[in-house]
Amino acid sequence: MRPLQPVRGTQDLLPEVARRHRRVVESARAAAELYGFAEMATPIFEFTEVFARPIGEHTDIVAKEMYTFTDRGGDEVTLRPENTAGVVRSVISNGLAQSVPLKFFYRGPMFRYERPQKGRFRQFHQIGVELIGVPQPQADIEVIALGRRILEALGIGQRVELELNTLGDAADRATYREALVTYFSAQAAELSEDSRRRLHRNPLRIFDSKEETDQQVVRYAPTLADYLNTDSRRFFDRVRAGLDRLGIQYQLNPRLVRGLDYYTHTAFEFVTRDLGAQGTVLGGGRYDGLAELMGGPALPGVGWAAGIERLAMLIAPPPPPPSLVALVPIGEAGEAVALSLAEDLRDSGFMIDLGYAGNLVRRLRRANRINAFAAILLGENELARGAVTLRNLGNGMQSEVPLTELPERLRVAAGEEILF
Ligand code: ATP
Ligand code: MG
Figure 1: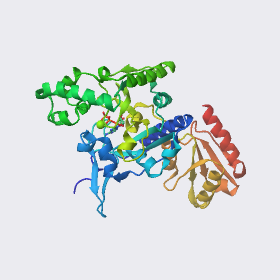
Figure 2: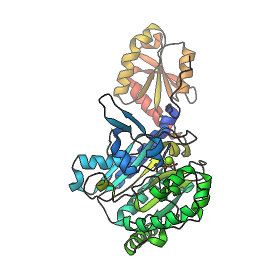
Figure 3: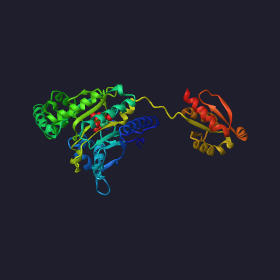
Figure 4: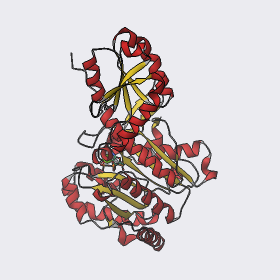
């Protein structure tokens, strides 16, 4: 029999890693709330069409990476590879277009059939924000500022750089497209097979290729900057001026196009050098045409998503909960009162880990392993006197404490622990 393993590209989040994820999510949620974003969630699977058209049939995601299946009722559904399309679908489904601006924060698992590597999984997790209904560049600026603030709150502000580009509007893209087709056609022999296929359908996608040969060709391709109309140029200037005013530094990257088709105007990524090839920790942009493309009203939007796994690898390990107390019954008298004493202490607000079995030494070893700051030993003789032994696991000192005084003594001990 095959040893029991999780599916390739998926992983268990054991407590040490889960704590890192939680730290990322909680920091992000708190920062998002500072900007007036509210948490929401969409289903992890949708009708396939929710993703296929908006993301674009020539993107890697739609062409190769989606987990798509027919369910038992005959519906074609897909595990979400990203969440912007789902959020916009939700805005349309719930008739929220009248209530703009909408400001949403989300987090949760995403699914892409990719080659697993460090920082790249088939089930991964994202945090993200969407600001919907605001055509002004203030929205782009605030969304980027929020991303920056989260990275700083996580202590990795110094390890990431912001890259910025504009993709212009639909008209700019049409003229630029012609220029690209001409350029890439002349270089077709040097392109990968995938990119040759993209050439006439969606040449911009070639920029997003990770193939080394394509990257060589892309290096000398014409850039969109030369094809921007006045409005697009002005929009981008205002985004840049806003970032400058907030002291947010960035690098212009004219080759930044992002993996999805629906972006317009602003595109940005926060990139680190510390994760090898998987350097993008947070990426996003403006998607003014998306809602209409999905059959809804015209609704501008801008947002980003960040990979929780990649952020979790960069942050310092968050400590386990500091205030656990181990409750250690010794013998039958101890066992008899342990469960109810544990509940009473939890009622008073203490985190109690109850020792279930094993001798005293083993239970104390466990108390140390779970990082408890104190142990309460329930021995027969003390209990007969209405007391327990309270042991400081930091220095091994212990004393007998009447049960009535236990909550107060624990509070003092917890305070000392925090003072250390
Ligand atoms: P990459 O260029 O690394 O493939 P992407 O452009 O496909 O990233 P987006 O679709 O913009 O990524 O998703 C936003 C973020 O989600 C990425 O910057 C990254 O941090 C994370 N992410 C994307 N795909 C994966 C994956 N397969 N595993 C882990 N994290 C991922
Ligand atoms: Mg990708």
